[in-house]
View (cartoon, rainbow, N blue to C red):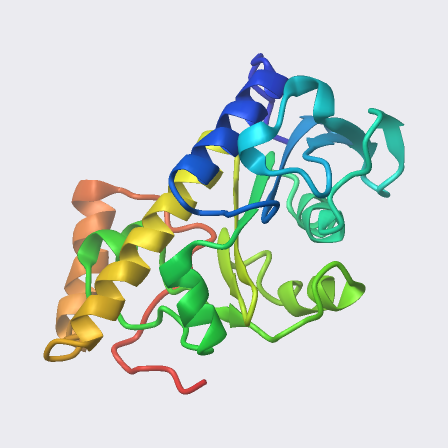
Length: 231
């Protein structure tokens, strides 16, 4: 397992909570954030508390079975989703579930971000799938995301929102930011002349250039083809 950085996890988690609220990625009490603090322990946000109001004292420590180790508040009701990701991916140390407007609109329309139209998105995000609808806060959510957890670090949850995860909170946050930015561009382009994908030849060449020039790691990124996937 990747060695965790020596950081102040409570402070970092609170800062991310405030940031996702200020950026409009969540509203009211929406969303939840967690960070792995030991191999078998995580720190997470409480339920029913606006992210702009989260303080260090509000955070809860849990084991990977969801048992509370410390903290006076109840953990997020979506914690099952976080725990499933940590169990499946030892390299993951942070998870953010949010409701970014454009990305959630795509999720609610069951439209995957599966058109290879921006080189930086192709290489940095990969194809973003939509998980089947699952009732929030239930084991259904875990079942809906399990087929994808080992393939990618970001998912759209049908009629729900998004979940991004990575080796640290910064990575999980920037995946969320890039996801929403991409969804916004996609939506605007669809209302203009439509989204023009790269051809198979262009896509193949981009991946070749990445191997020799950009060298952006393609682990946990679902590769595109040049055909729009049917949902």
